[in-house]
Image 1 (cartoon, rainbow, N blue to C red):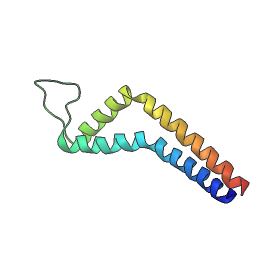
Image 2: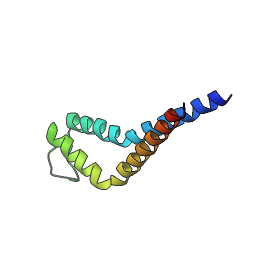
Image 3: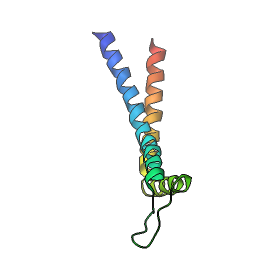
Image 4: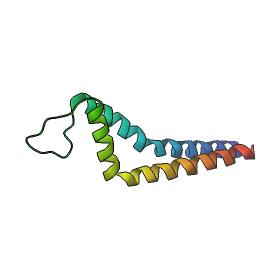
Length: 92
């Protein structure tokens, strides 16, 4: 029973590491999507969409500016998860 509990706790910390990477994965995947379908930034009317690397970079900059706290939370989760997984591996 103790081994099962330790394994579950280790898996929980690995899940925390994954959850920390979610904001970074999301911005890359949504940036690729916007590069394909086009992105006009904050323009409402009279603007043309940009495509390719220009749209990707525009999206990444806009997302990073507006949602920068998600990067901080993700980084904290990843660091905390890595520390706890390493600590659990040293106990073995």
